[in-house]
Length: 299
View (cartoon, rainbow, N blue to C red):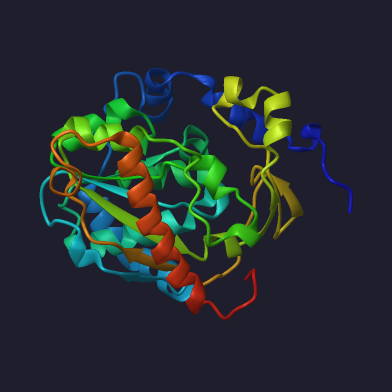
């Protein structure tokens, strides 16, 4: 099978990538309209009306199992920090968002942060916005927390979500620690979240980090990867473009106990200590979930 070159991605794919070159402010204008307010795009009525359909997809197709939702505070600001899987189709995010709103109701303010490319994909952007999705920028996370929201962040971003399927049970935040600084500066608790199964929705072969650097994708699209996957309907896709249908892998998601930074790490938490301790807790929990898996590596 021929490995595609950068020029095989297609016009639609490169259009989506080029659209994400803008800064967080410009991206916001693209996503929500000039003068639009991302925090106000969330639509509780839309969430309420579409949750039954959402349930059919999540429960029947992905057989999602979400454990420990009661560990998330029912009110007030909280930073939910998760590992991430499944490429740009973020199936673990959709499964968790469904479970969150089913548990707390649409009135509990909730905002998942997503990469610019993901929130610009036509099949995803409208739903993401109305379910509370925000561009993955510190300014929007801070504003959401100031409004007493639960904010979901995936520090590993595209580096983690495109990791090879053989590394499905590995937490990989790529040493990104902005989430620690955010929680400390805002004085909010952290709730760790681990998920497995998303990397089985396709066969993820390589992240292509060297090729991404060569193509300067970080500069033009905030991407540090140029990954190759195998999945329907086209077989080979690059950056999940032009389209990929996720295979029906079973998703299992575990919410871990809330971490009060002041209580666990003292009045002046050390950034590196917090990062190492929480990611270690998450890796141990993910190892336990991986031990439960008995199915093939994909599908």
